[in-house]
Each structure stands twice: as C-alpha cells, then as structure tokens.
Image 1 (cartoon, rainbow, N blue to C red):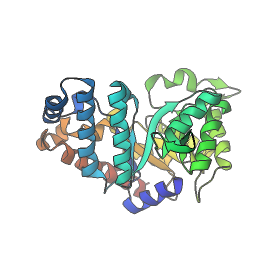
Image 2 (image 1 turned 90 degrees about the horizontal axis):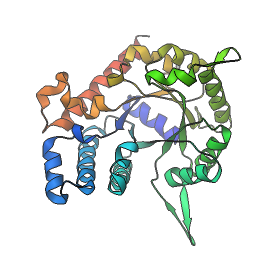
Image 3 (image 1 turned 180 degrees about the vertical axis):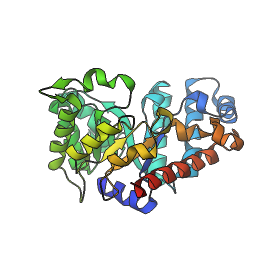
Image 4 (image 1 turned 45 degrees about the vertical axis):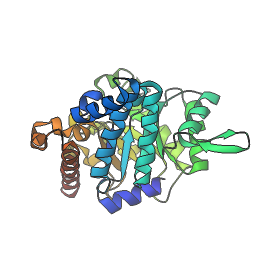
Length: 308
C-alpha cells in the first residue's frame, strides 16, 4: 500500500491528504435540512448529512489528491449511524481509487490490539468465511504501550499489504508534556522515532517502509531531526493550514527525492467555504471552495519544495 500511495503522489504531484473530519457546524444548511427532512433531527439524520457532505467533497477533489484521512471520532460521536457513515465514506473513497488513512489512533495490547488491527485493516473470521470490517488502507496507531501494542498491527499489515502511521511527535500545543521529556540526553520523540524506523526496516515497500510516522507540521525543527532519524519512513504531517503550518515550514519533512511525507489539511479544506478567501463560493458551492483550497495547498507545498 505504501507503493500505491507513492505512485498516486507522483501521478497527482500532490503530497497531500484531505482530512474528512466533519462537524455538523461545517455542513451547509441545505444538506442538513435535506437529511433532517428524511430522517428527522436524529443520529440517523446527522449521519446522512455527514455522508452527503463528504460525498460532495470527494466528488470535487478526488482527481487532484492521492489520499483521504477520515477521523473516526467525528463519526463515533453519532453512535452506530455515525459509524455507518464512516464505512460508507471509506468505501466511496476507495471506489474513487483514493488511498484511505483511517485516523483511529488505537493503542492497546495483545488480543485487544489484534482485534483493532483486524477490524480496521484485516479480515475477521466468521465460521468458514472471512470479512473485512472497516477496510482502510492505513491506520494511525498510538505507540505508548510499546511493541506489544504495535506488533499486532504490523502482523496484519504484512498479511494484507497495508500500512501504519505511528504517532511520534504530535501537532497539539501540550504534546511536549510527555513527548519532549529528556531521557538519557534525548527527547522521548526521538526515541520513539528511532523505534518506528527499526520496526520499518523489516517491513519495506520498494522505496519506503509501510510503517510510517506522524509528525506535526507545527514543529518544523523537530521534523528536520526526525527526517534524518527515519530516512526510509513516510511521514504523515498534520497541522497544516488551520493549525498554523505552511508549505515553507514543511520542506524538511521531505527527502531530497521530493517524497517521504504527506501533509494533511482537514477543516482548512472541508470547511473552506467558511473562510474569507473562499466566501464568494457560498454554502451551495462548498465543494467547489474545497477544490480551490486543495489547489492552493498543492501550489503552496509544490512551490516550497521547488524553492528549497
């Protein structure tokens, strides 16, 4: 799957991923009204609004981008109907040949970790048959519990030819409370990055490992250090746009080959119509505003990479 992701990045010339993290207040009124007219102001109505909103954005952007990253919590808050919308979104994106990164941030051990891995990336046995549950292409994993939490995911990835992005240095302001702690002279995120690179050495695609890392765009200097520590690790970079990251800040996340990183923007793209720069599109044309925001982001990152 890492080979497919790289192939699609090369084809689109867009090392970006659109975060499908819908909140009801991002969804234009006409979509909400249509969903509520059919299902009422219920969890089912909310889930329908989310699904129609996502579909509009995917239809408007899929030809420009290699991948999407739905964040499962945005769906889970609407209970089972929300998870149905999540699954419909995953399946629809895959039908458009997009790589799907399930942003699930799971982190447990033993059989629990294995069950998460099977549910999201593998196949579960039911009698004599096997079924894929959510069937994303990649998943995000929290490594706080160590190898016991990560290995079950790696085993499933190996079997299914899928991949992981493991949290190394996250983009949130308080990440340093733990991640920047000095252990034997080095910050914890460096130790985690080194471990991710080790896991990756045994699980290589053609050019990069399918065991990737998450490193926030809000910490470019740390990104530079981690890029050197993890030369064959693909880095998922959250924090672009709404969280403050810009293309010029991100060049250090990429290798000299122009690869090695994929940058995520969520509300900066899916709620673009709410920004002053795209206000002229209006609510009805929210998806066109998202497409324009994607084009601007691609230009920003490509320009920064060619000027470094």
